[in-house]
Length: 336
Ligand SMILES: [Zn+2]
Image 1 (cartoon, rainbow, N blue to C red):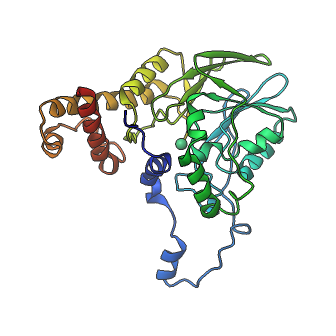
Image 2: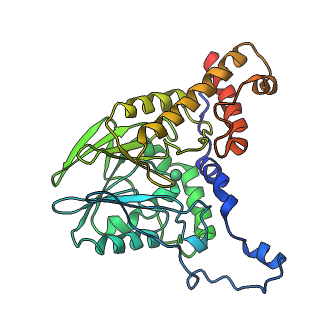
Image 3: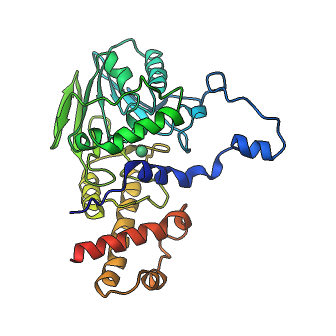
């Protein structure tokens, strides 16, 4: 069976690209605008701000930039969080470079001197994992969904790291390496870590095969990685949308009040955000299914679809047509 997942470098770049509109000038654009040329010195330029945001008592997160990873931003393009327990700290996701992970450690140290005991991963995308070695060196136990194992040992992951070592130098370099989880889980796993209950809900295959949602029932908080997009058209890529929808349905059964996504700000409207991503995926599949069955050409099916429910959402123009096309292809293959 052909793999329905895009190579991750492509999938993830496409996830972030639409957010580029607000970026400042690149150095070549600045040159074109008449500025004096600047020598590239990432180590001395101002690093992106990393502020702690309190989600609930004892639960914090830091929010990555809406940008592509670059030497200027240390690859700070994804979120990470942490939860204080009675005897330690449990981190969720490891950020996109060891230097960033160290900055997160410093932030944690500004709140508590307790040891960092665990890292829980929402998925194995590069910008969420290149900081893992920093936490591993501190003795943290890494827990992830076993779907990530295949990617971790794949040629795609090696090539991605190779490319990142030059594109993101000096923050990602020859010393940066991928880190295996110490414990791979494959089903719903409930952990009591020093008095705090963590529910690890496998969600993949959705955005990735290994998506994991981490729910803290005592705080009504969930870290959901990249399976919920807030107030915008989702980036679907070639994901398994049927399973993604089913995963969102199961998440909606949980009493989640506060949601921390893998990118962008946290939400206190968790149900609305989960529902929007689900409704959009359902609509894509329903509108493209009949067309694919009837062998109606995609362009005609797209033009004949009433998109009015979603067309006012941010990134509709950037993402919707490609999402629809990928779904059309998926419906063709599911019909066979
Ligand atoms: Zn991501």
